[in-house]
Image (tube, rainbow, N blue to C red):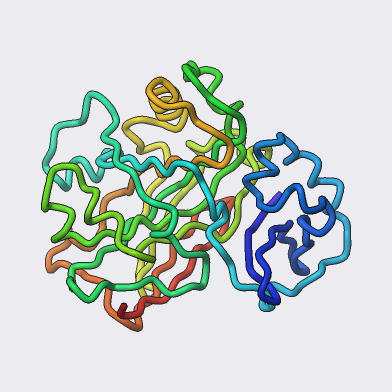
Amino acid sequence: MHLASYTVGGHDSYGIVTADGIIDARRRLGPEFATLRAVLAAEWIDALAAFAAASPDYAIEQVAFLPVIPDPSKILCVGINYQAHIRETKREPPQHPWLFVRFANTLVGHGQPLLRPKVSTKYDFEGELAVVIGRRARYVPAAQALTHVAGYSCFNDGTIRDWQIHSPLFTAGKNFHRSGALGPVLATADAIPDPARLHLQTRLNGQVMQQSGIDDLCFDVPALIAYCSTFAQLEPGDIIATGTPGGAGAFRDPRVWLCPGDVVEVEISGIGVLRNPVADE
């Protein structure tokens, strides 16, 4: 299934995305399941399949997409995690995942404008695969890690590069308001048994800027879940953004920065295209 969170008629909801439109799942499940995260927490995601043959409630054009999980308790992001990106940054491969955090209100949904902040013009794109946790995970071995995954989505880890280097911790440059994006859908794990087989492409105004198989990760998805679940208790709806391939704007010659009017697309096979215009704050 492909699941999405969205706003329609002034109300937030979630549902199943089909070729014909969106089947509203929140209305069918009832008020105790107010968000997709609540469905994951109850381990009811498989129950949504019972609605998959229903007639769509909305055309896709009728809804405004939210980040596919609007209210995660944690967003853990991995830096310097593709072999090509390691080479272009002229770093040695890390011995452990390099992690930083993002806040939920720094993300927008598919189709919503990304904001270039008024304090910088060095706004960059980073297309990534996002892993959404479906079952509580603590001290999970890599061999069992994928059983804790609800599904996968596209992620744009929009970065303000001059603020990123204010300290070695990355936090400031990664947490500007509405600077990143998540969506358009959650592709459930049953449709993607091996995320390493996926392919990612980032386009800026139609031009391919990043392109890689997920198998170029230094630390793959099971390894990241095992590592993160060792120091943190991962909860349903938590997000792990797995890192970006080579080709981001800061590592090009000449450098490429996002400007108002630009359109960034992150496409991952089996998931879809996360598309966002850029506007000034």
